[in-house]
Amino acid sequence: MLGCGSDGGSTMRALLFFFVFVAVAGVGLSRDINKASTPPSAAEPSAAAGMPAVAAAAASASRTVVLQSDGRGHFRVDARIDGRVIDAVVDTGASLVVLNESSAARLGIFPRASDYVGRSQTANGVGRYAPVRLNRIEVNGITVRDVPAAVMPDDALAVNLLGMSFLSRVKWTHNRGRLVLEQ
Image (cartoon, rainbow, N blue to C red; front, side, top):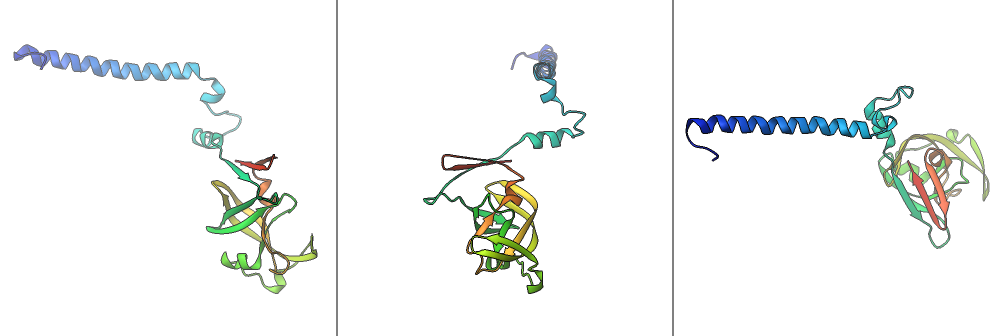
């Protein structure tokens, strides 16, 4: 201990008070220094944007996914659609996310014959499809909600397509055999 006797107790209290004061003052000072050194646009959300501070912080967080092409130049992904993993090929030429009937059935989607009201030009000719909406599609941490999609018969579509109804809602770039998705 620092001291003995009656004098030691008051000395200990005085030292404790001093250290607590220095700690509190130091925390306040570091906040003031941090605020002064941070540009206003980064320190506070824009009032014009009308975003609360938590939303502004979440909006600035981004995710990046890098996909390598396979031997044929295709980008295959395991997309988690409404909680289930579905194999798909990224297709910038497809307007929608398109699932074959087998994959749609694994998701609990069972279009009736009367639901196939859409017509689409495919590599195999004109195909018919059933329009659907998918609650959520995730690709390695990138999530898009409420995605327009289509279901096509298995004989018209061998592989599922991750098309522009997903891709248009993320930033993507293609360069030298790599496809980069950002959100």
